[in-house]
Length: 311
Image 1 (cartoon, helix red, strand yellow):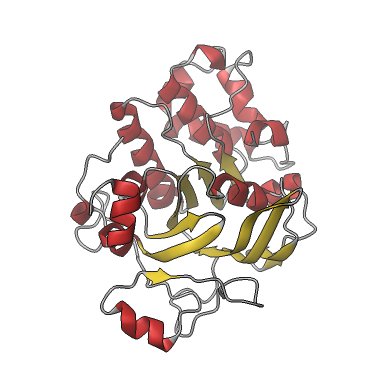
Image 2 (cartoon, rainbow, N blue to C red):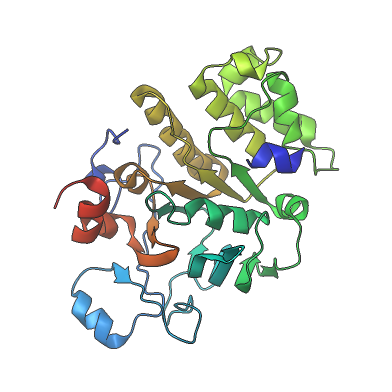
């Protein structure tokens, strides 16, 4: 049930309201540390005042390094280092490295077939890398199965929500606690209903009869029922009306601000994703092309031209 359950537009507020300026309305200021990821001194000088770093593949090293002198987050919650993933003979991820800190929102951007969903599936253990290292809270995940990763604190909100349509809202939520054996499941279910009152009102209703926005809230609640420390979200706003997009993004921010949950937001809409993120990575043809603080990425000419449709 866990494997099946977990697998599978422009943002309204200005960037100044989100990044490097006014903190969110709840008073929680999002940190946006600079990202270097193996950038040489020459590359840093060439970058000028921007903290956005290009991440060229290093021949013979399997990709760029995740170790950076003076990095503000010495012990990130999730570390992916030089991941190489193949589908048969197709090399779909090439030396991908990223990190997510505690209580941090990180966006993973890219166009179609760039490797975004494969990266998330690799983190969840649904795809095994041929080379590279993946660690969560200091634990090597190379031999850890998907169910054990969920139990350790990694949850997912899959693309297109993937709720069980014939099951009730409450039964869908309980599938998120499938790997748990503790006595706090009932209390957590109560807290999910308090967090999402609309789900409480529809707890006996078949999930397939919910609206798209309600199903997305259900997918959020199901992820929270696993008691996660990190939630991986695969295009959570896909197919939603603008008003519901606004609500979904607010809920992503609430996960971090109120619950202290880290979020890896896999998204094709760059402006939307970067408006709530602390940092971002840009994937292109299976490689990390750019990385840096969200505000700097949003101002980067290459990102604007490729993903925002303007120079």
